[in-house]
Length: 433
Image 1 (tube, one colour):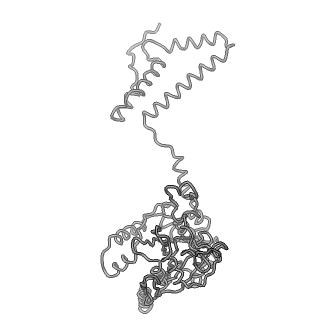
Image 2 (cartoon, one colour; image 1 turned 120 degrees about the horizontal axis):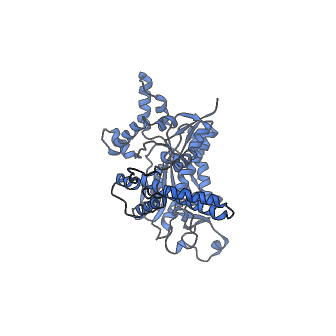
Image 3 (cartoon, rainbow, N blue to C red; image 1 turned 180 degrees about the horizontal axis):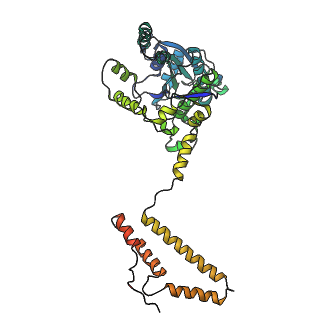
């Protein structure tokens, strides 16, 4: 029996910016995901989320093996209070769903490996926090009720929902670089310098579209995934998830691509935020939720959804869909389909073919200088016989078709075909001698 693969459609990755102009603070963002109390040493403002629960694991990574004696709170104080004044975006915040098919320990290991890879490529630090599933207490209570009363509900799906943890990332907008010998021996220490690192320029790959003088130098390649932050986060993290599932001998695979990019004809849903989910749980009607309900009803009648999503597939077919080969084959098949031609186009093509045939006959006759005279006489005789005064000659027909194709087209297609294919008048009688 061949190995099976299940294509899952629950992959989620969102990215937002931490902007000064909107009153955001990188200290607040990190304090929230870590469920801790952080204070701004310069302004004295506190961000207290120590009462928040549900944090499974937290972590902090520096790039290129840079080690610092600063705590996480001191590090982000240094960034917030010493970042360049013209830099409106101070950090990026991201949230991604973790696969419920693997254990919490494997989920944390997956996140740590991704963070190490990220710091090596982008040269900046990153903080992460793994959180438990949303509304976990409510889901566990429902699961206990199902088990107690043996209710007819798919408890396996509900068990997976209780393991549906997610991870938060906070990423500074500037590079974190090691102090050089020149920096250490300088008479005047810059504000951007800390104990073992300094704040570098902004990570240009985070914002691949450049303007002004920056477009002339160090212009990123928009097609390169390593220089496209949004594409990198969505695709590379999905690859990390699939690698972890494969190591744990799981048959599930996730994809960051849409149904359209997979080559599947399936009705797509719209993302529902936690606010929408909470309001729906409290009995309120939300347009986004109602729209998704309609789309999910459509999916149950769509063959591509029933045949390819959340069902065991042969390994070869599954990877063919995930890699986009099915979409490529579909596009090739569509391009090879012959478009149905209108009568006018068919008439023009016929006219072109007749002209080519006439030119070919003339060329053959001109090349054959040694052609016997009797053959030429026979050809002339045939032309004389075919060119009776009552019938329209071939040259006259060609001239008439050229005039029709060059004149403005009639209003309706039926008039076009009639004007082109109107046969010559029949002779009522012939005189034979």
